[in-house]
Length: 360
Image 1 (tube, rainbow, N blue to C red):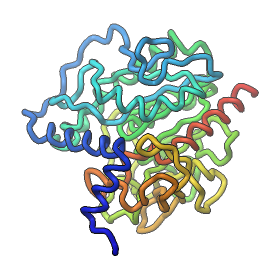
Image 2 (tube, one colour; image 1 turned 30 degrees about the vertical axis):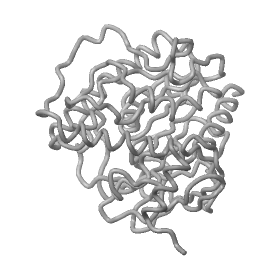
Image 3 (tube, one colour; image 1 turned 180 degrees about the horizontal axis):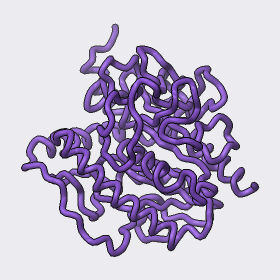
Image 4 (cartoon, one colour; image 1 turned 90 degrees about the vertical axis):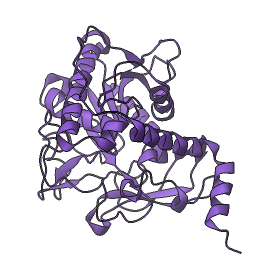
């Protein structure tokens, strides 16, 4: 007998508690959004020093506190703040620590992870702010992030190669940072790679470059450096109004600092980290609900005009791809799992690229 949806839900919750904790966190965030007060952009404060969420050697570092790898990673976390203002302050909450542990800590075996706290646009702002309010909040977040990057470069980088890692709002911040502060500057020579997930990185149609970046191309081999890996994961064909996989039709919808491109001349980049040089489906090395699994496959797809990483399969200790959570709704795809769905492949790639960079 085919199990009912309720039976499948109970079964998956019992077998995969960490996955359901992620779902619960998203629900709590939605509740916080619903009960919040009036929206307003936070007043700018003097940025006397950077508060580090993750820093090699730092006590209770959620990214593992490891050091000694050949390159650094500079991680910018996604929208997680539950604060009831348009922009978060610089305090470190449980949600920042949780997401850093899930997304960034595994990279600590291959790079020294640095992650600045920035006054990000909050979950509440994401769901309740007007377009202009959201753009202003993102501009403030970017200004903060750029100061953290400058602090890292001036006081901590010491000429080392660096991998940029971002997800969602973190990817938006890094798209602008590369465009404004890295590309076509001496710092570009230190760019090992950029892993920019869940954030609609743009290229010229039919090209590997020429959208967000003029000289940082998509990665096509595992030993290539100075390149970008980007995708958004979906477990079914994206709906016509999906938030990811399609370029924005109008400028200025994601803040003004980066002057990011828009319109029909561009397409969203998809690079499969398990098969950089192939368009065929490839087995992914995932970290789902606290378990390592090779049960899923991924392939870059252009179905319905959206360029996304289509996920299928299941088994090997993981639930079927079709039951993975599409939160807050189907237009987001597997946004919560963008990093985890190919975590092992991404970590291995950083290790290979780091060695290639160090051996140049």
